[in-house]
Image 1 (spheres, each protein chain N blue to C red):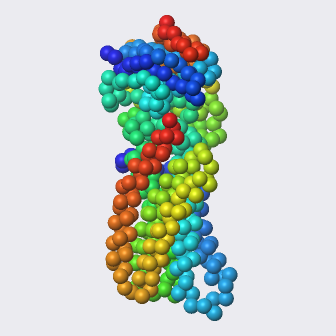
Image 2: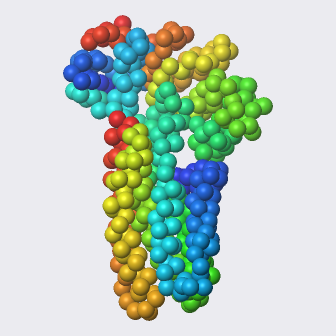
Image 3: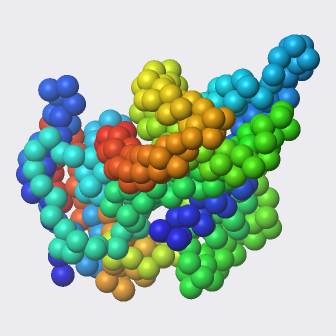
Amino acid sequence: MLRLIKAESFKLSKKLKSWLGPLLIMVLVLIAFPLSIDISQYDLDKFYFSIIVVSLLMTAFVATEGMFEEDFEDGSLEQEFLIEKDFYKVVFSKILVYVAFIGIPIAFIGALFSFANGVAIVSFAKILLLLSLSNLLLFNLFAFGNALSINKGAMLGVLTALPLALPVIILLGRAIRSIQFDEGFTAIIALMTGIGLIISAIMPIIISAVLKTHID
Amino acid sequence: MKLFSAKNITYSINENKLFHNLSFSVNASECLHIKGGNGSGKSTLLRIILGMTSPSKGLVESCNQDLDISYLGHKNAIKNYLTPRENLDLIFNNIELKNAFEWVQKFGLSHVQDELTANLSFGQQKKLALIRVLAKSSELIVLDEPFVGLDHAAADQLNNFLNTKLLQGVGLILTSHINPMIDCKVLELGRNNAEIN
């Protein structure tokens, strides 16, 4: 497992476009949005979260696009199958590395921008945790979509993963309201942590089966 | 010692049988050369042996669940955005790495080991991919068209290497349109039938 995590980290660190691209998109959207409206007319802190949520959804999708495609195309997946006999560890470590390299930095950017737009600094840690957990869920779901669409076009992946992502967005909205009104945050974050752990354990099994059908 | 045996393997695509009731085995120190025209199912048969593709009928039984296999298929499994050195670092552990770099020298890739793999010629990329198999100690080596893209010197080196491995007790299965300079039993795939010589 450690070998796979090291290998995935190294590969991702060498693919500048793959990890820097989503971070830049997040920054660009979060900068462009307040500039595109007359911010003096609005209490930006009231609805700035909405744009963070949408950006999060978009960047999570962009970040996971092509997650397995390269390894499938160049034959690396076949080699891993011979070593590991299935893809569970490969998928698990890939998602873990993507969340660590892209998901958490995106969450940090989101938390930073919410603070810069009037959200209290005391909420920074809560928002960072919330967005990180959301990314863990979204990356798992979009990885599933990506695995489905390896050689069938990206649209199938989008159509499959987006409906699954909607409950995450609803949950994220609830959690944000709990931060804004300072009530029930612990319960929601516990729920999201639980779902995150379950999905992180189960989704690699499903994705592993999908990848096996692709190489068959 | 028997490494694996295939029993009554049949593979069909859309009702068309690519091969039918194929039975064979490979022992340690034994080479199996799978021959046949384009589309006769050579690569598919290799993938069935490796467990990557499920046969329509039949069974492949390995003598050992943890049989250590080195495989090189049509895809090179190397990363174009990394250098050959980085690619080898990804594949091998520290002990095997020394062996891998000896093969880099033998194949004359030393001067390009820090260039991007994408900039290497097809033959150089093929040599780099072959090092995955050559530098690893395994019980069974499976190669799909290993001589494609290799110059004469590299092909000779590969033949010598495979002969040495056979003497060391490693099993070998390969597909090739060129007859390798190795003592092999031949499995000839044809339309709906196969013959072992």
